[in-house]
Image (cartoon, rainbow, N blue to C red; front, side):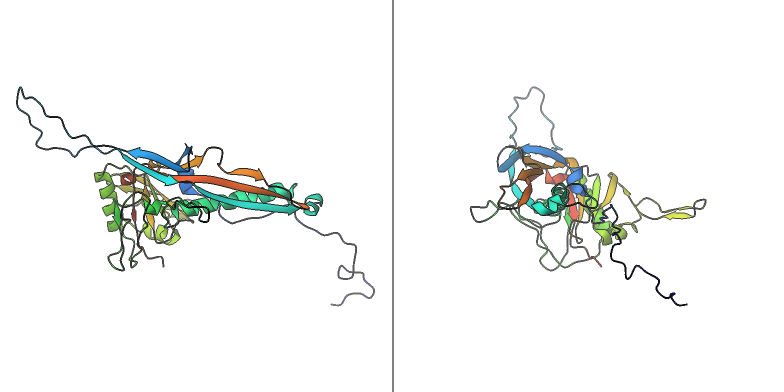
Length: 320
């Protein structure tokens, strides 16, 4: 079949209007389960501090004489801990011309870019808080302050590799990091070991966070919720969102921003993010230096580990 002679077609036309949808599609993930699940606090100094308290061990021989003149028991002092406020930001810059022209999918280009940078900054914070093996850094005029991440605090309730130098932080105070070891399979036995240790120390964790691979491994555990086949809807439900342990029910959450080799077992209300007063995801107009406008999206924050003994982790897991 051939085109009739002298037929004017779109390939030759010059004046056809463009067809650009007024929608912009984005699939990059912005869910941040750790930041969304923990409390928020206010910090009033760059070194944000708090205290933990431990009780004396239970005494099975506490039997006293009638009429005894009692001796004073030893007092257990509080432990003073702290973390440093880290500054993270993103900057959007849009030319005056781009602001003036018509846009598809957004009315104001600068506002749109501010929104995107805010989402990117949120992803950065989630990664820094629970997806890096980072100790706190005091900083100076040439070195940025850093806030110790979750991995720098967890030391009491862990299961880790048995080779390759695997080690917990030397102290659960944010000053050290984990030493990654030779990877081994994530198993239910290892998870149960961590859960038992947390319970013995007084914790009541409610959340397990994993990467994608070990979330699927988790779905094979026997303690999980049972897979269901619904004959009427012809649907098989095999995903696992809860784990019934000997010490309570835990929610299982996949986190794209944590390290795939780590499985975190968390009592979320024993963690918080403290934002320096007035510095919680704020937009700051920057000085105009030409025919463009700039906005700085900024957060100054510190991770608060209210008591690391309430949480734990299964570390050095295989990821393939």
